[in-house]
Length: 357
Image 1: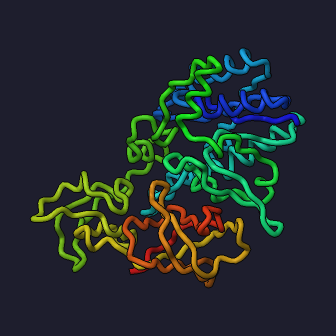
Image 2: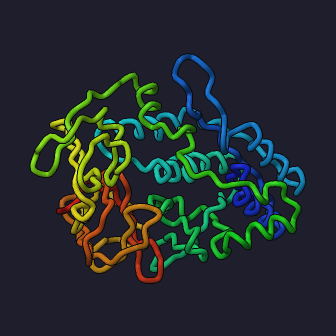
Image 3: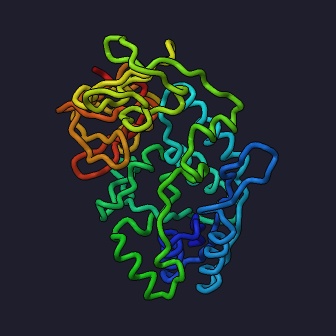
């Protein structure tokens, strides 16, 4: 087959491309150029991390060494409109966004897939640690073989159409295997460190980035306890997320955490850690994957690093209700809830709208 491989210049995507080439496929490396951390003052964007000149050069060099072509695709306009703008809007609305899930669904496995087809490619491959499956006519993503690196959560919003056209060559491997295989093949990126932060906010200052990007500086307001008593002042709701402890600027006899963000009254509600647990959630914008109906027992993740926990699902009111077997912390509106079966297959995913007390 002629296969396009999304290459960031890191070890995972580089090895994915090389493995497919070794299997005899006609490989085309694609690196997406996106806008990163512009100061919004007329200066040029900084192309760092996966879009830095060095990373693009790394991807190009892997392609040269292993005898396949490489192209850089400009997706700045789409990325800005479909990823960065919603990212800012969610924080300004008191929610915590999931830009990586949106990017996978709208840019990597949509925009790049369209470009790959225009180049005559049959499939698009990436270096994600996840597996693909099919059952009863439905395609799905499943957890990768390496539980420490499993990235199936980030692929929960992929459509059935996209799933029919992608490959995940690393799903059966563990990270240590990947680095070893990269070294055996002489890849200079074998020991390249992984990127953890949101790729377009390089200094991790989300609030400052949002203010520069939108020109909006949300007003300060009160930090209150669950009974409404004022404990301090916040610096704008876009600076806070559910479960946050640091940066509250209030003194108390026990540690306090952000339990709720009330946009309508411009208040940050704080509580002791034991009070953060929620019995369930309601999520909408459902993406059905293995299951055409999210109903009955399942396992759920409400953030990528969480171990999947048991829940009872029920679709209603244009979304899905999930009742946890035991109360859970960190249920944040704006994040994704990804639902699994016992075997690690993704049943579907949806965007969390509210936590159920």
